[in-house]
Image: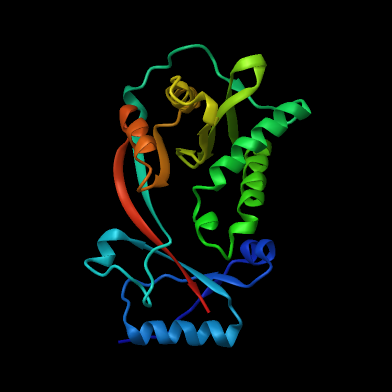
Length: 239
């Protein structure tokens, strides 16, 4: 068996976290592969390697290099052919928004970071919130994306959903409802806005990824016709 490894260094992650980060793909894992991987990490001074494995490739094996997954994600897809736009047009967050709106948007993005694998991993936790602020700011500025918002009491942003064109697909990267507005149907309102935006832009397939353990989000996506495509286990292997 060929146990030679080839880690791809991730420049953005390396710069952002201040430590050398890489990613590695392999479908077969055993002691020799793990030893070769750790040997390359030591030689190249790579601190952490991300490994993503589709669940069916893991078979009954529940660990890689003696480690369990840091996160497990599910990918959902929806065929838009049967969707008809409904409701009133959603408000789009603009780059020229008032400072108070930007602060509200950032506060919601920080809430999302707590559920991420970068918060779960204590070695990344101190940078998780900042990562999500950068992410939402990039989506606001992206000409191929829109950040759609809802407002609650006194016009304060109560939730947002992002819509991003990627080829012939529309990806829902982030969706969140402020904690004090849960149970008011805002999640469904945001999903309806996402579906409308996708259909109005002539996109035929919608895609969303969420944590396997996030039952409320999964129920919401399934309510709007999304079907489970695959499950992926993600590992952080530290040197």
